[in-house]
Length: 402
Image (cartoon, rainbow, N blue to C red; front, top):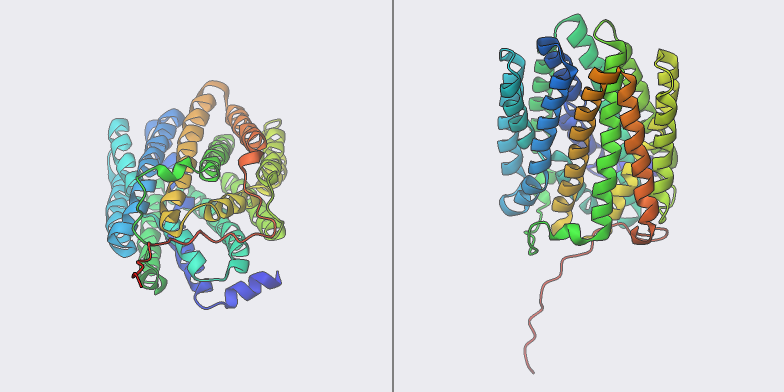
C-alpha cells in the first residue's frame, strides 16, 4: 500500500486518475440503464441485449480508429467531437418512442462516438511516472475503475427503479458531460502529445502480446456482461438487489487489484488470474439466490482487476510509444466485442432458459479465457524484474561525413 501512497503523491497522478474515472463513470451506468429502459419499453430482454450489442459494436469499431486519430489530430479535438455526438445519441435513446430498429441505429451511433478516454489515459501514464511505478499505476487504475462498477450499477438501479428509466439514462448523460469536460481540461492532455504512428493501421495486432490481450479481454468482459444481464434478470426491476449484487462483484475486483497488484507478472499470470474468475462464475451458476450470488460473484470479481493489470502491462511493454494508443484501442475493441457477445447471448438464453442461462454463458466465456492464455503462455511476456514502459520511438540520425 505504501507504493500506492507514493504514486498518489506524484504530481498530477491523483488528479488525472480522478478526472478519467469521472469521465468514464457513465460506462458503469449506461449498459444497465439501457437494459432496464429498453426491456421496460419493449418487454424483451432479447431486444435490450441486441441494442447493447449494437452499442458495443459501435464502440468496437471506433476504438482503434479514434485512438489512432489522437496521434494525428491531437487528444483534445478528438475527445471533444466524440463527446458531443455521444451525449446527443444517449439523450435520444432516453427520449425517443419505443422502436427497436431505431434503438439499434442510435445505440450504434452512441457506441461509435464513445470518447477514447481509456486509450488516452493509458498512453499518458508512462509519461507521468518512472518505469518502476508504471505497473503499480496500472494496478491502481484497474482497481480504482471498479468504483465505476460498484457505484454505477447501484445508482442506476435506484434511479431507474424508484424514479424512472428515462431519468437513469439522463443522469448518465449529465455525468458524461461533467466528467468529459474535466478530463479534457486536464493539463496532462496538453503536455503529452502522441506521436503519429508510422506503421500501417492494424499492424500492432501482429505483436502476440497485443493480440493475446485483445482476445483475453474479449472473453473476460464477455463473461462480465453476461453476468450483469443474468443478475438483472434474477432480481428484475422491483428493488435494489441487482445493483447490490453487481456492486459486490465489483468490490471483489477492487479488493483483488489492491491485494495482488504487486504480484510479479510471469508467463502464467493471466491464466491463473482468469481461473479465479471462472471458478467464481461457475459456482454462481448453481443457485439463483441473493446471498449465494453475492458470495460467489465476489470470488469471481477478485480475479478481474488483476487480469486487467496484466493485460495493460504486457501491451505497454510490447509496443512503441507511438503505437500505444492504437494498441489499447484494439484491446478495448476486443473487450467491447466481448460485451456485445455476452449481452446478446445472455439475453437470448434468459428468454429461452431463464436467468441461469446467462450464468452458463458467462462460465463458458471465463473458461475459454483461462484456456487461451494457458495455451499461449510461450508468447506471454515475462515482466518479472523488467520495465513495463513502452519502447521508445527512434528516428534516423543524420551523419555528416568528416
